[in-house]
Amino acid sequence: MPAKWEEISARKRQVRDSKIPKEWRLASIDPARINVTGVPRECGILTAEELNITEDYEAKGIVEAVAKGTLKAEAVVIAFCKRAAIAQQLTNCLTEIFFDEAIERGQFLDRYMAEHGKPLGPLHGLPISLKDCISVSGYASSVGISARADTLATEHSVLASLFLSAGAILYVKTTTPQGQLAFDTHSYLWGRTLNPLNTTLNVGGSTGGEGALLAMRGSVLGMGTDMGGSIRVPAACCGLYGVKPTSRRVPRQGSETIEIPGYFYGGITTVAGPLARTMGDCKWFFEVLESLEPWRHDPQVLPYTFKTPPKKRLNIGLLKSDGVVVPLPPVVTMLGEVDRALTAAGHNVEVIDLPEFPAAYWTTLGLITLNPTNNFFNLMESTGESPTPWLVQLGLKRKGHKPDALDDSYKLIHAKEQHEIVFQKTLWERGEGKLPLDVVLCPVSGHPTPKQDGWAGPDYAIVWNLVDYPAGAIPVRTVTKKDLGEEIAAPSLGRFDDANRALWNPEFRDSFLGAPMAVQAVGRKGDDGALCNAMQVIDQVLRGFASTKPAAQLPKI
Image 1 (cartoon, helix red, strand yellow):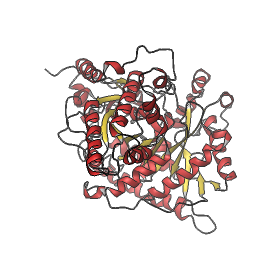
Image 2 (cartoon, rainbow, N blue to C red):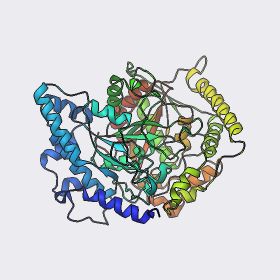
Image 3 (cartoon, one colour):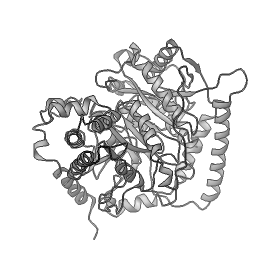
Image 4 (tube, rainbow, N blue to C red):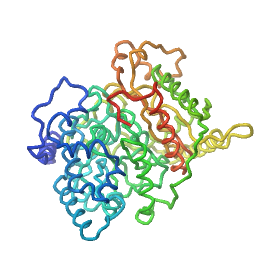
């Protein structure tokens, strides 16, 4: 008889926790403390050098320091292993731990440098954390489901192999929600992952473990995946940067899902991309990846050129509402501040409308709900596991293939193609008398980071997956007391808007105080380099504008 999920969960957690050395364990954890980002500096586990490594270097800077001999790869990986161990104890962000192998890898890289006088590759000595679904040989990719917890990968994913060939160090895999199906990270297998900026808030999903680990500085560069906001949402919740690229740029071969093999949500493709504490590191990741020629290793990746000359003055389209959800007052105020900051810096900001967006959102929902759920429920039932409360609230139920699913799929994919044409003309071709846009800015969501399991909907994020545009999150600031005094002036746009407005009811509103907010930047399909250039420019402006400077709990830029 198959083991029950309770037994599997207890065993997997015990194995994971046993891999944290006793000397890296916290003496105590204060349950009343909601911002835990300062604990690594206070607990005494990290040396002064390890604090310096984990707090004062970007990913690119670590690689440069190791290449120069300023840092040793072994010292770097030990520092991040220790900090990841602390992060796990405080936020429950890890699934698989391979600290011993990582330290041995660091020692090998130091020997290689001493013997050859040059780095192994462009990622030499850099620890990289991976979302649980990205396969590493000998470890499970459970994606938050107990029935998958003991299925070990027999080979590396293409992405993991490329990282290792370039000299990187793999040391942890990070939590996802059950089946990677939620915008908060909670599963019965691993438990709930906490937001280290405020442990009562949503950490985001489905790449929530990466969000928590990076916010704790237990990683300097993490890899996630995104089908409807799964990179951008955790980045927004945790005050980070995250970029969803155009499809067929970053290898996904060897990344696990709960989908029926070959069924990629009928027209919405999941992509892999980076999360980091600086926009510079996200951009640098794509530059390094291009140099590794991933199209030679994954047949789904097309050859491309990332590097694009940066523009000093941007033409920016500001989409204040998507026509599905009216943003809550703090988000509206934040967008106004972003507008003023960019205008004051000499950029052209134009408020735009995208009337096609609501129809595109309905098409997106149609494609997602066309996907049968039997595979998910079969896995769950094999161990007696139930869907988590967020999925129950979502209304996820068992369903097989509809008799007319193929016809519905054709209709929806045709609708997707029509939306792509309209988006192209509205945003990028524009016609006479209108400036060509370099980038579109909009919210990541209609609300700031909410309480646990409070994320209201994917509308602002998921439609960019439908049309396959690159998009990323840029942290802006946190919610203030003044923000809480504002009321919603616009009439409701419907049931999705009503769900968003419910978060602004008096009994919930105060929970937003101090909650992170981010702006989403969207680029033209295939112009990932131009998008990252624009995000860097926008971020530099926002970091220097008084009204949008992040509060102390957000990253130091």
